[in-house]
Image 1 (cartoon, rainbow, N blue to C red):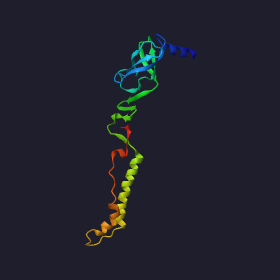
Image 2 (cartoon, rainbow, N blue to C red):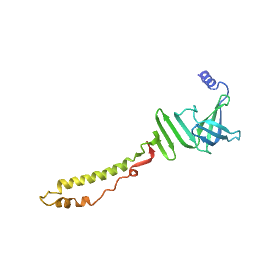
Image 3 (cartoon, one colour):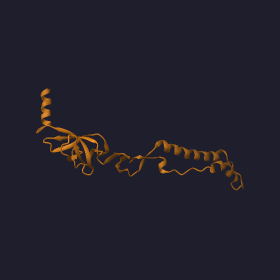
Image 4 (cartoon, helix red, strand yellow):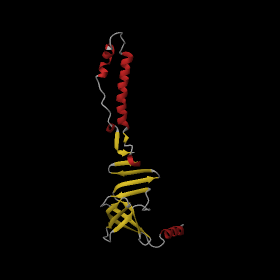
Amino acid sequence: MQNLRNVIRQLAQPDAETVALVCTVDAVDKSARTVDCSPINESAPLLGVNLQANQEGECGVCLFPEIGSYVVVGFVADGAAGVVLLTEKIESAEIVIGDTSVVIDGNGICFNGGLFGGLVKVADLTERLNIIENDINELKTIFSTGWNPMAQDGGAALKTAAASWYSYRLTPTQRNDYENEKVKH
């Protein structure tokens, strides 16, 4: 078993030892999915460090660190390829699986571009629907129990029975009454 462990270690490091450096982030390029950073040991700045294994990839998970935060940059082989392994603080995260995407940032969560707007706040929507349903039920009660049609009264009996109902107006529902703008889909 010990020999197998040593073989795996040797295969994982064919040319040289893997090195990791702690750095501070100087710049983030979201389109290139790279960062420029400065090692805290004051060695030369690192430019264009990959945020993903495949720099040109648009799928998977990509964490965009905040400028000024710490990252751990790992190097493989002879140090020619660097990739961010860990981040202290992130500005945003992007997850893409097939044709489904999620972007998380300080403004909230956005699924698939957010074209449908914010998610429904179920409790607020239920409260609003209950107000409307109660209003309709009150009108049904007036028609079924509180009003007796009278010939030739010109609707006076109906007006009297419904007076308390029609004097109360519902306020028009606004989108922000039930929309959670921090979670868009």
